[in-house]
Image (tube, rainbow, N blue to C red; front, side, top):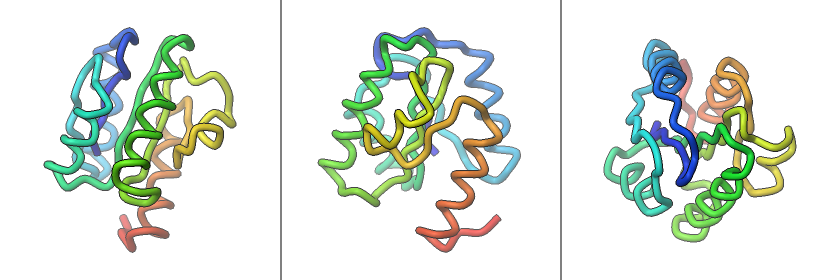
Amino acid sequence: MVLGCVPGDIYYHLRMQIITAFFEANSIHVVNLSRDVTKEKFLATAEAEHTQIIGLSTYVTTTSAQQRIIVEYIKQMRGQDAFITLIGGTGVPSDTWGQEIGADVTTRDLLTGFNAIKKLLKERRGIVF
């Protein structure tokens, strides 16, 4: 999984380290790109790492629009199902935000996001944990 905070957002190092550790402990390798990650960097890194998942984090509601820009870019450049897109963080404006912007998973908590990712990996890629 490629994980990072969208441009202009606050980067909470400890939270991102916890997310990374949790996914790694559950057999999902994470490349943590840190903060101010551009749409181009998310996509280029995901392709270079041959990952299945791109995780976009936002902790401030005003930067959630960046999630839309990045998800749309990824889908436009590589198609709807090239990657599983996960959006999360306390800045996610609503539980339906992901549907509104075309993301595959929307979550405000780690366990819900992980379980949704597991389900999609099984359904779309045949990957079982």
